[in-house]
Image 1 (cartoon, rainbow, N blue to C red):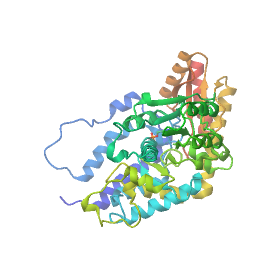
Image 2 (image 1 turned 30 degrees about the vertical axis):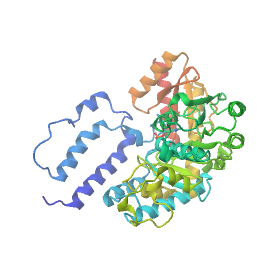
Image 3 (image 1 turned 90 degrees about the vertical axis):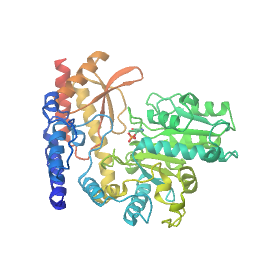
Image 4 (image 1 turned 180 degrees about the vertical axis):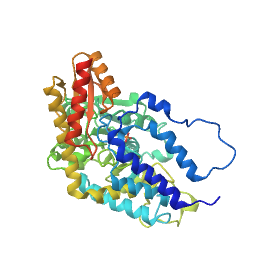
Length: 460
Ligand SMILES: *Cc1c(COP(=O)(O)O)cnc(C)c1O
């Protein structure tokens, strides 16, 4: 079957562009009846081949009524960054080129883009310029990589080769984290063979940041043991970051490996207005962050940085006879820094997002989202809501009286479709959670969304 590539790729690009040009006018979450109305995905698979054009048509018809406007300007749930135009276009090219990001031989292009993007990111985020960077699927994977490297290093320091001998019979590692860490830390620890019960939790201050006095106390209880300390830039509820300038020296004093989960909060470093919230973060040993959140790169895109490239590669790489002589131009290849072997060339979209914004554009993006979060908080408060956090970054916690009423209002907002907000439980309170992380969100979007939320509140 001959395929007209121009026709079929154009068809896909046009459908994406069309969707993106109307997403701001659609209900943010599709109405249940719209979801029901779409032709089904689920059908018996036919025996014969189908022309690609027809497949694309069918896919567009089945998917479109079921798309959620997470990429639109009024989706404030989770921490979602709508992919920017340049990054999306680069991702379309990534699929078109279909490069494997394992090493330079498989794709000098993929490798070049990743190395350049990593250099820019380290500059923007205040990380050491010689840190290694693995392009992974997201902060979950990045946290797993950072903690795997930490596991390798703290055991190597006491003469144990975890790569060869595993954890059975290994010296115990203390894993210390704040009680308001992100849940992906727990999963990473589970995957790495620690078990969540090995986690030693440190009390958090009211804003969710780790209590540094309590951290010192916990560490001093058993000095000298191999230890990993997990810190956080950007609590997923409040947006507050740990006080790295105080916490990292304490952890260092105990010889600990310090990993920072900075999925979105690390981006505070990109603006002089917020950089003090993460001052000293560059002193850690490993960092995880997302590009698909605040940088507005399409899914899936995250980064695992490590101060020690050799440790990073030692913990993550593998070797195979057919790989020897297959393209290592430096001490390690890109595939040595991630859990994947074959891998999408994620660097293209990150490179394009950064080129499109420039250094000032990233700063401005961070500032604008923070301003918009504060605007949302102010309008909701003026309308009678209670704001439960100091809006230091892009997260806002809101309540409207008792928990069931707040939940009912969240549901009503989601049904209304003007915007989308989720719920959370923060320090015992049931709250609405607003996260502003999309470069296309405007003041007008905030105003109509605040109105919709207040309307929902009045109706419940
Ligand atoms: C979103 C988030 C994660 C997980 O990131 P994924 O991109 O979903 O893997 C981890 N930590 C924090 C603080 C987050 O906000």
